[in-house]
Length: 613
Image 1: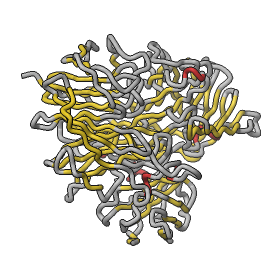
Image 2: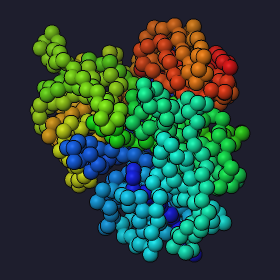
Image 3: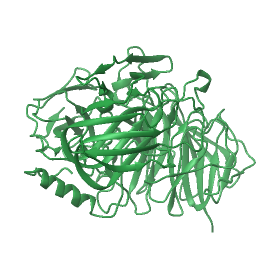
Image 4: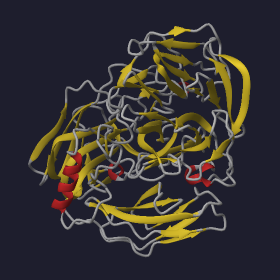
């Protein structure tokens, strides 16, 4: 009997003991990295994101990847992404190859959902108006699809779920007013509706701070967040209905879950929500995703990260491991979520931070030329904040670009041209052993508005200990790879203080970059444990303020919290400052808090856990 994959796309849208030397830290990191032959990966995911048709009428050119639907099918994986004009295939969840289908929608599909039902066919439905025929294939690698003779409607931001008994459910909704809903379909009769339809869950911003609209869960006028991106996971007989809030363009975009005993509910709010949350660090957001089960039983949550520079719909993808604790609570590990992480092949730490730290933060950068340097944030379609950064030169007359090592993807530099005369030189504050480099290219008036084949990023990367004698460690001068968020692990780690990117040719009229991130292990000491950590919940219990004593030589701090001392599932990473104000707590939930400092050499011990009612 052939198995069935069902894909419905709607068209709308370590911690370890403190070591005494850098050698100890290097040995630990090497041991972890060599524990298996697993790959590493780094968020945002390194795939060939599609340029968007959406906003092309306004001449806004940008890449985006959002609302991922990932399924396992016959031991391999397929990923469907909003408005991508096709989908990706992988055998390991790390390396993805694009498949261009023979027929697809001109504007692409939006808010995809996927389901693997007994391994025989892939069903897919989608239309820009939110209705259309369901199509299917038994060979998704071929790109050939066949339609069913039926029409579905009301499938915006939907999720198709078929239970073990064959009963079929369609969850959908994307609104700041209306709830997530479900209707039953008959999979044996062209997926026609059976007449069963229910309203299930809605946002409750008065109780759940993380559901409030806006960057950092604050907006001066709009209070109601958007509930969207329904997804269903069945585990140990329980049904986990996941949903996204409060808005895809914000750093606090997250996924929560309600738990039920049946696919129709009733559903109860999960007390450790949100289950996928990454508000701090370099790239933010972890919402509107899907949870997929790896062939070895490990769960993974693929979700949407907010870039929101050229457009509020400019987004990237991320992947985090998912677990179920002793209470059956679903949670993900987003800790140091945009640092290198062990790949899914790792034996016991898949998806966790592998110990490589950021070596390039605040490094001194000089560039070959500068057309412009900009900080640009698009929080809503008509709300664009753009600030041009004045041109600076050092004492030698070289052009400075601080935006390339500031850990902010919304700041970027644009070269005068796009050729092999353009370069970037980073002098890191301290030398370190380099293991990997992430290049985050930026779209600046690229003039590309759809899926375009043949795009490629060609460059070389050199390193140096003294700034005079250089060694080439990456050569993609003839590469045919389109890699807008290129993550490159060196064949052999190398100790250096200087990193030089040499451009050859990249997509777009001008070579532009938002960040070059160098990862590895420093040669100094890890920072000390944080002292003076204070937590104060406000009169509005959804809000809390943090302060602590600065730690010498710390790059930043990672605050953790949760509903129990052993359930500190949430974290917020900050650089430089020693205070933070958050608005993402659940009003009636007591929490436990801890903090640690970190730098290029590693992480400190965690502070004592503080309980706050």
